[in-house]
Image 1 (cartoon, chains in turn red, purple):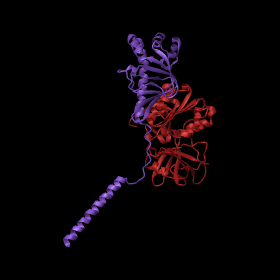
Image 2 (cartoon, rainbow over the protein chains, first blue to last red):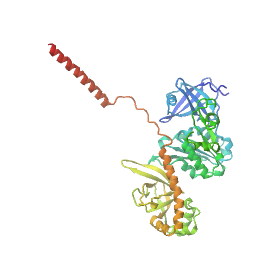
Image 3 (cartoon, rainbow over the protein chains, first blue to last red):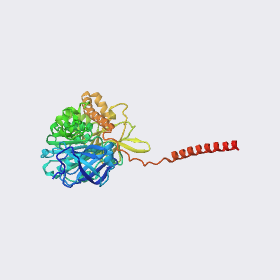
Image 4 (cartoon, each protein chain N blue to C red):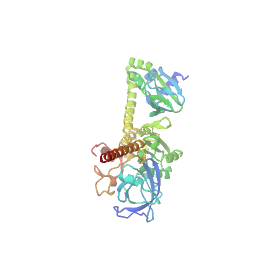
Length: 278
Length: 195
């Protein structure tokens, strides 16, 4: 049974079980419903997390969709609410509304090569889709994770990336924007990794998540490689407030990002990416 | 030593010169040599005359910039299928970065002077080489601009603990003492007057 009530505006109390520091300003929280029960979601969806007395923020779910017993969120502390989230400890309670929004179409990509392109903390919203793809590994051709971070010290889920890299059925390529000689890996933008390929562009689905500029260039690199626009999906972030398309705060052209997104098929929004005023 | 026909085959197979006309390829072969670099060796150094450029056949090369008193910063890594070095095309033909082999690197090098001479003599070769180099240069320029944007944003440093800096605290206490001393002096001079 899903614990969340039908009224999407009512937060449900969740208790924090574990907090793990990923980077100096990024942390992962595991939480369970105070009243017990499960939490079901689809990869790519987000929740509104409410720090009582401070405010609400939209945060993508970053756990395994197959594990309904625990809700996992990775957050970067960049503002008032996320900094308040950062101050919470195991045992503290916060409000959760969701899950909201569209999902990465993992099942629709069956039979294709699957290329994940992530930048910075953008790996967090993609991680549930990576888990799901690995759970159905035999349904895909090649599965490739391309990840770009600022420096080697800013690589998110480092141990997990190393574990994935150790698998024989998953290709993981990591690059950083800058490094010193101690780093033995790639240096350069993540779009360079797209150019190296290793996938069949005519039969590839690609999920892209990161800063908007990075997604624009990554989509362009995928297209240049031969991947069709209707086989590319991106996750767009706007000022989500209500989470269910009522308030209009997250309107992006003709779309409400919270309801029609955050995951969009690229051919439907490619033009919006080019409009500076949006 | 690699025979010229094998050099021609390597040029043909490398993505950078893929599909090149056979006559032009033969002109390239005349300036080419097969090279190998162990990890840590430099393909070229910053500030040196750019005498060669390289088609990377295997391995990884770090393009680095040296900074005094600090470890060099890697700007980009170049791998199999890429080219290293384009300073040989642009006057004053001087390398602006270091290129260091991160692993064992196998490459085909081209003598810059030899190739420039042939490109000037044969505009078709000149055009072909430029046509292939310009997109690489444009791509690297765009990539460098993206890197400059610092897209992922700096990670915030942990907040320092709130403790007064010793010199400030000292200055403050000195200030307090001066004020106290002044008050004492005033009181004493008043006493003397009264007395």
